[in-house]
Image 1 (spheres, protein in one colour):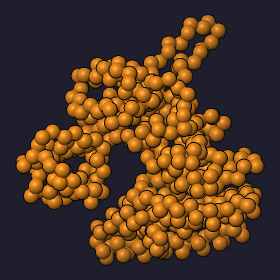
Image 2 (tube, protein in one colour):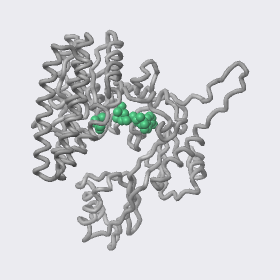
Image 3 (cartoon, protein in one colour):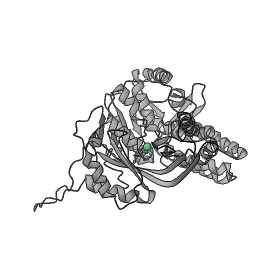
Image 4 (spheres, helix red, strand yellow):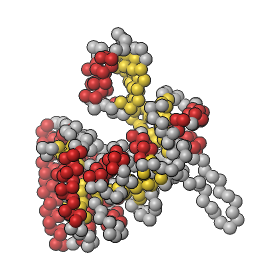
Length: 463
Ligand code: ADP
Ligand code: ASP
Ligand code: MG
């Protein structure tokens, strides 16, 4: 059971979490928690402040984080356990403050230090939630995720070393589960085989839950968040979005890959491998049925959801001496070395067109390739994507999409890389409008039936 930032953000949220864990009856849950809502961003900003000579602001912000946790400990944890928790939190905060001093001296935050810095959020929240569960009578034990999730050293976006992780997760958690204990771990954080702190990328607590679920061959993985499930689009973009009751692993993975923040893109892979169903549920509405993600969903081919990935750059790589495979591989090697994953690619005789979601690295890539190619790019684009089993085979879907956005400057239309997606590039400023238009087209509101006795539901069911 993974609880995201808003599901642990304050006393009421943590009390709801306790109620949900207690309601699990005789199944044996493992609890994974994110940092309290906003804390990871605050830590990131504190690191930036410290390294740019604003140490006072950095320390003040960290102090606020400390006070927030202390207040929660005060209201959720009884006197005897409070003393121990308080000592631990104080020691962790002193370590955090000395890290900020080091960052001030260094004048920069490299990704390795950033992983240590950001990881504090999950360390604090997991210790707090463990004590709150114990206080409520749940037999819980804190487990440091960095001692059992082993990754490579790709700081900022590390990938698990599966065999070691599975071994260590089983060794740490099986005995606790056998003794009827609920293990509580911070999501997102991990370490290399030699114990250097890493993280799984922003939003990575979902992935932690799936990694642990797969290692323990769990019967289900539950992602508890602040919406009623995976929806037909981001409800923040379109208020008509509705819950998808069932979807396939592949559909959910495409949706996450193309920017639906509700799931970290890597989450589905371990669950798929072990065939473990994933449920996305609302911690503010625990009675809701949420979304069930399974190997096969029973639906007919149709558009299932619409998503958008912002901050995309459209890159053109001109190859004056024409395309050859050696040149092409050096182009890709440069993108890879600068941790700049390529989302979409098209080639012609002298040009490679790419879409990338990490434009920050582009100046360095252009400098590196300048002897062999000219690299130009345009920022502030967004990739809008429609997802659904087999939609590519329904030729009318693409033509309806074209029709709906024909007056917008649609730059690249991609259909064919997967049977499940159709995507196109627009200006970032047009995201909301294009998603809303497409949502109206593919998920029309059903007008309320005239019912003299009362108001009826205005929506048809999605999924
Ligand atoms: P958590 O802190 O629980 O991990 P996130 O903020 O990472 O929560 O993810 C939940 C958010 O994802 C929702 O509040 C919603 O705005 C956003 N979201 C984006 N696309 C979708 C979608 N298709 N369905 C549901 N939520 C979505
Ligand atoms: N706290 C981390 C983040 O904000 C990880 C997570 O919430 O999943 O990215
Ligand atoms: Mg998240």
